Every structure is written in structure tokens, then in C-alpha cells.
Length: 69
Image 1 (cartoon, one colour):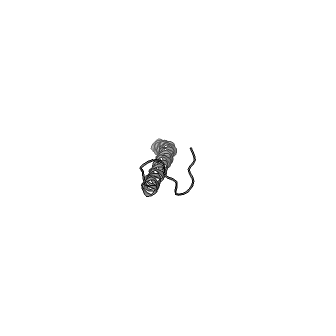
Image 2 (cartoon, rainbow, N blue to C red):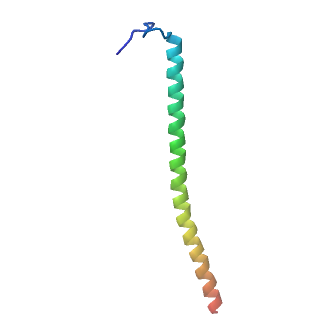
Image 3 (tube, helix red, strand yellow):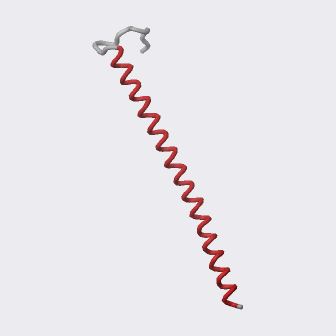
């Protein structure tokens, strides 16, 4: 249903409808931002976890090479 500017949708004043719409927009934006940061954080942890594993393995191999000498 489409209403012209200033047209009422029952007893609810236009200002209240605009406030509610604004709150909903802000909530959606915050939720989207939290999801994005959470996803990026997970991806970073997976990537860093892989790098840390390789780095630790490399250090272990280096130590073993020195022990052989």
C-alpha cells in the first residue's frame, strides 16, 4: 500500500512512523556491520591460523636441522 506524503495510515502520526522507520534502518545497518566484521574476523583467524601453523612447522624444522649438526 502506498501513501502520499502527509497521508495518515490510521491513528499513528507521521512523525511516529518516520521515527520507527529510522530506528529500523539503523538496526539493520548495525546488524549488517556486525555480520560483516564477524565474517572478516573469522576469515582472518582462518588465514592467520594457517600461517601460524606453517611458521611453527618451519621453526621446528629449523631447530631439527641445527640439532643434526
